[in-house]
Image (cartoon, rainbow, N blue to C red; front, side):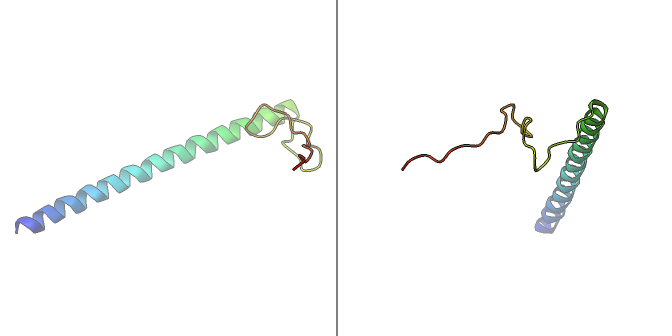
Length: 75
């Protein structure tokens, strides 16, 4: 009987942990969506339409360095 009760406690603990993890993932997903939406509103207000595939003249997505062509190095 003791093993059964331990198994029940472990199972309940795993279920609680899974629920907490799910809630944490949902919170992170919500914060990311809000941040993305705010960035979209800011970009729309400033007249920026985001990065384009043809004209890479601005910053890259996550760095401050401008995109540039790199020549091949000699072997």
